[in-house]
Image 1 (spheres, rainbow, N blue to C red):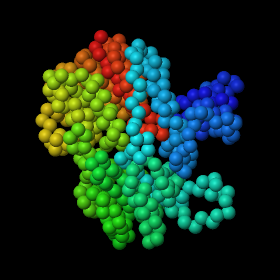
Image 2: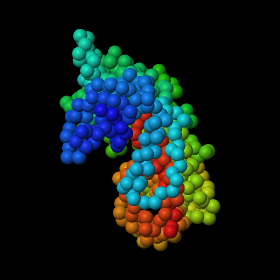
Image 3: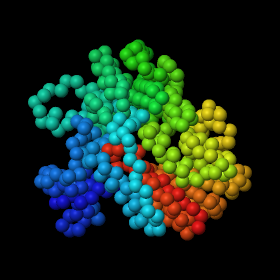
Length: 457
């Protein structure tokens, strides 16, 4: 059976004899394969290729030995040029099929200069019962060391694949992860067991920045002081390049640190990211785009689409830590940022002060409640609205308010072109789509960002 296309969530597509679509997790468009179906739905099947008769010319050799088991990089077996082609096609299909709107000529996708080692943040999980691959299970090898430090197996919350080398974050990320694992195993420091909720070492977070700074955060399940200090001292002594060494004691059932107290063990409690001379303070809980170089491209496109002349009032909805707001501020009269997460707004205000930007203001609150008539009356009619919502897109009340205030231009940044298309369809009677620019932030995955410029009709 010929694999004909690439679809959502990194799956490839073939057509079953009964006309239904088959979503395949381990093939590349152009492969000729035998397929075993795993799930049957009314409109489609889910399956996997069990034999490849003919390899697609779009294929390439994956660089990572964990590819196919890890699940983090679903497209490492596809040439990067074709990854970009399918990402562009997904954006166009969503805007046309779901949005049903008139589109201009769409600018070719902006690809990433680095297709490996581009992430500035990685999180790894410890486990005392690592996931065994089929090859390991079928071998006669006796595996005594069951400790793992790596990634969750897709769809399995308590199964961790041990990682030797990850190709997503530059050095010293791999050295730190492998070093901690070896040190803890040698010193009998217990790795976490998620099912039994026992053990000491839970997670390891590593953040790098374009300024060369490095943050490492170790999450412990309980405060076993002697063992905790042993691990942290090892990191401090072995990797003196760490500028921010942090830890968390988390006794909860889940690994999220957003409600936890982050303690600074050595160095500062933050690192700095830099863009066009602007500095952004990043702490353990900060959101910052995980591909710094492509974030810069994304923000330049956003600023370009805004067509600012210097006398505009700009609203930046879903502003996060205010990165875009500050990035466009020097070309605007005033920028108003709104965000639901209080910590993000505190960081945005801190960064604006750090950068001595005085024409930005930040407000915290749920967008659908804050972005109302009183807010407009207080801050004035915006000339330009920049909106960068989460994957779910904008709330219908936010869209209704945008229609009501009729800003001249809206720049819509999206990490999900399907929900973006839905919102554009609602705006279509009032706004014309003038420009569309997809941006690849995550090579080797199916994820794609998209920037759209809308102008009042």
